[in-house]
Image (cartoon, rainbow, N blue to C red; front, top):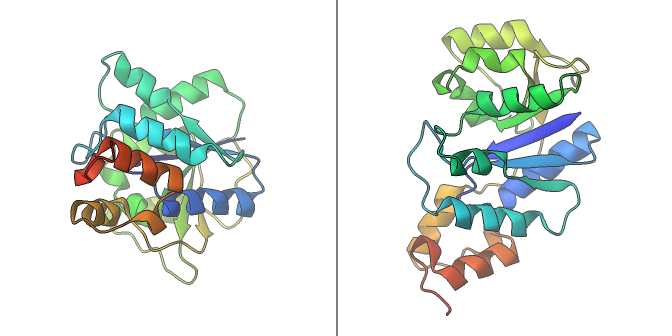
Length: 214
């Protein structure tokens, strides 16, 4: 089984890490790959460069063997290829591991935006979607997404290679990258929302409007 959680990680924060660990615990996984979206195709440009975001992700994953910083989209971007698309990443992994079960983890908010993704209808041909949602929360998407959820929703963790949507209830931390960036830009300490190594890195390099410690 290959399990991946994608994101711009701008910056990676404790909420990201908590969600990844919850997936490992709930599904009994030995590891989960955190895939850095180098050049997101459907959102504003990240506040930090890909090299800084990649280094912060490496630092955040360093102390937990379950968390693997995955640079496959960074390597593709370095070759001058198009923006980072999830479907491209899934196709790459499927070519490398045609017989492996493949899981792509995303939050409920990201799932609601699925129709904005590049070639989004092809995602389930390559992987299962694991949608993280808070306990007791309902998932009620509109239109085509509602039809997709109705026909592909799984009541139990997936066992086949791809094609299902499994909604995983997990306690989530109330933190977002946009909140962290706003706090840092305003001069407020966001140290309690970030891994210590990441916060130190941000201060050292003067990211997100923080004055450099150097």
